[in-house]
Length: 248
Image (cartoon, rainbow, N blue to C red; front, side, top):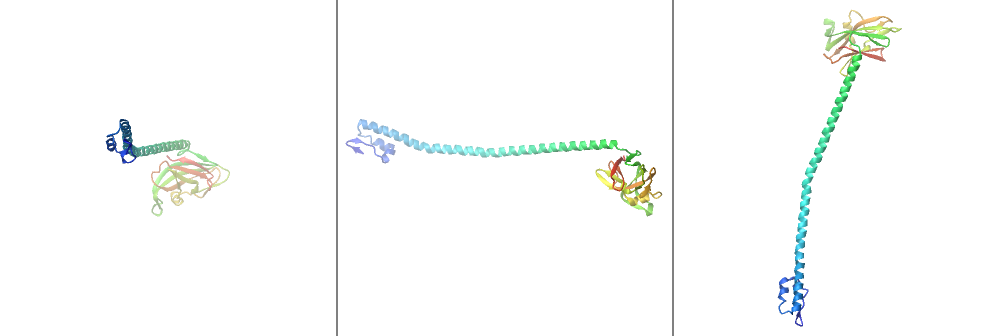
């Protein structure tokens, strides 16, 4: 707008147009020309700022997107590290448990060996309460009593035992006095097979007076080649006192 021959900038589209602004400099007085020129320069900076702002925002958005991508790419790596560490810890714990189990087993075996070393073997007497037991010999068979006897389901193990009553009263020897131990398992005596094994002399359910010894066979129907077999002996029907005799 021209007012009294002077140029006055308007607030319309002219404020945002670099070219129209400079076109209006024609025929403007010198002072007004300087004012318009300065105004146009300010407008150019303002418009440039408007143009830069979207670019800056776009750059910041791209940087943020790159950071997010980097974090997402790092997640699988961190997850793999955590999983690997957990697997290593599990393996280590299993190794420690296995070592502990081996040590416990070794300690148990050592204790059993020491205990077995203290226990009597064949032909060595073992006194339990007022009764002395001696396991004299061990033999095996698959049949006892011949054709009219009995066959073993697996194998008969025969143990010749001497029982001496050193008490003040008579005792009755019974098959419940004896058990065979091996590998943590317990085997009962076979009373029926013992009848054939002791056909010449009675052994079970025999009364033994004080100072008298009774000798006979205790028979077990068990698998062949039992590891470290032991004969457990006891006094009385209820077995309140027991002892162990190593058979090997």
